[in-house]
Image (cartoon, rainbow, N blue to C red):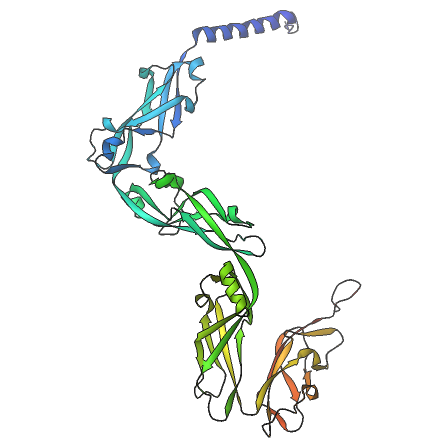
Length: 435
């Protein structure tokens, strides 16, 4: 006989509801005892003065810095707990011995509303090492990174106050320290006047040039809590400064000095008001009296490289990003010779295909010209014919010979070359190169 499952549906639903209510009542009335585990990673070590008076400090193993706490109690109470409700401490005074390595410190945990006998800690001991406490002093390096002051100004100096710091910590950790620095790049970018930066934080770098982790830093103690003040002093910038360099001795017989040139020709400096005023009185020129080039007996150009940054007067410095390299060249030519600058725009280009274009990489080329009679007073640069011709024109960059034709009575002392770049002619309509 087939049962009718749809019979008495309201009664069946009521039975289910009553069953659920009964279960909830039983659960809440009985409230069974349960045990729940919590991971505690911030075990506090107390009574460190116990070993500090012995000249030692406590260091934890990174892999041994957490414990698991098990709490037993009524389910509704235990389920409301989180790790933040539990405090775990390791008492150095309770260690069985401080002469072992590692030292095992008993860990106890407490939780409001939970009896001590219902709290269990695993492992029961925290593993630590005792190390000799040392103090060492370090100079503070100040960095501004790529930051720049306002236009027309330059950061002349960054001075930390104090300029050095004492660091106290475990011997092995302090021994790893290579340098102490402070980065103020974000706080000096765009400044337009002298500025003092307060409470800049120190960064510690080890001998592998790695920054100490926050965990390692926690074992170190600093003067002024590891913070310093930094004073940024600004100087004004002046550009188009020239160098005047000389030479000593005489070139070989039959040769003369044509000119003394420098690379770069001009540069920029930053300086104090007094130093810039003195520089202005000198025609914005730096005189390198002690860097004369010795040309004794020379028949070719003589070049000398100097460190310009080391030769600037007090109160001046090169602007950021400037190279300190300065090349001084004494140009030596046979008597009756001279160096002329010939514009590359006056060079005739022959045979360039219509679908190609060519550009010189420099504005001028040098012509070393000698007069047959030693007299160049009548030489006319406009009478020089210069041309460029290539057998195979192709895209690319080249250094090519320039054909030079001089008026009668004059000769060229050196062959002349120029750097060029050949490229396809672009289509004006599409912006694409012609094929």
